[in-house]
Length: 170
Image 1 (cartoon, helix red, strand yellow):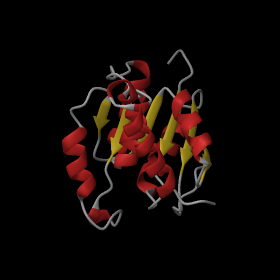
Image 2 (tube, one colour):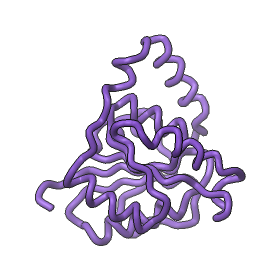
Image 3 (cartoon, rainbow, N blue to C red):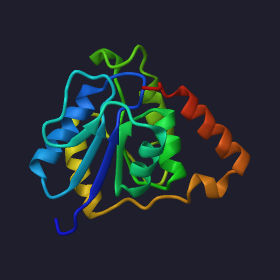
């Protein structure tokens, strides 16, 4: 792969998602020429090959999102809206109740609802996630217009304030 890609992955601020963190870290191990940063939350797995932070100030989070070539995340509405706001290609993997990653399977329903949007790719497991990271940095998805180009400034400001207030302060 010729150019160095910047990958930003996030599990959100509410629950750990070690399956996603470990998969991205393994991809970083196998692809050392790219910049990989993971916001890991309170999970047990700590990356060995990617840079990481448990929780980040919102300004740092938004800057990493703005500068990345690929945004990898759980299928949370906050992550989706933030990715759409920046018109980023997104690779999303839903948390699954049967794996103890959430109390419900609502992320599977969210994945079904948003998986057709331009710039969003949904995968179900770690192997597919690692495969798609490689594919998407060499052949990026076409993204839609920035959500902020389609929505009123008042709506965007309201959603941004809501998302910022939901993030724990550390």
